[in-house]
Length: 257
Image (tube, rainbow, N blue to C red):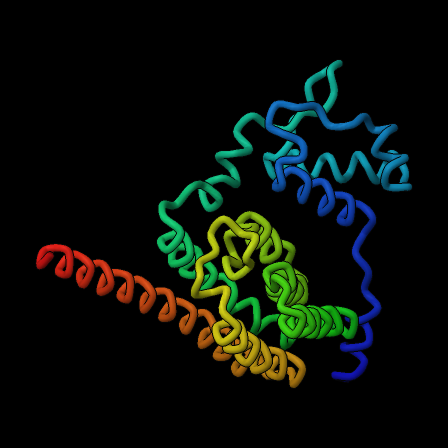
């Protein structure tokens, strides 16, 4: 019976309208279509996505129900003016680089622990493969001394996707690049998180998460994700303490000159 249920879950494909909703929502979150701007016409969206007008209308209705777009009679469909309020609370400027990292990690703890547990239970073969691919892409970039941020985010996003609950993915998309400050191209990056030792530690923690999800062990997956994010919090706190100690030492040295 369990094998049959698993097979059915693997075969389940998202509705066409869900695919369109996810694509447009991603554009809105990325700011590609700013608040107040008009979306492409139904005809243009039909051509872009290669689906029927019925599918497009269903997708637009879903986006409108979520408060992301609104139809104006005779004018078209527009991105809501309050989109920044809808999604911007988490994405707003949260202070210095260090406070950004700590605040984001706190939010991620609330989201990703359960995300990992659900992924262990609900993932299908393709979703598990996507998590593995992101893990090995991180490894490849690390070995080549290239920025690992995109692969790191892809790893966590693939886990969120494997929950088969789109809101877990949306939350990570809202955080965007703030979610992964270890990429050297990120404005929230620091010299600590750019180090090889730091990122090696991340990858070891990623492996524990991956193994738990692959084993279908929800409790172990939750605990591995908790350990990973909690360790990241501690690393940032230690960095803050080191900076404070360095500042105090500098002030003392200057006062004796």
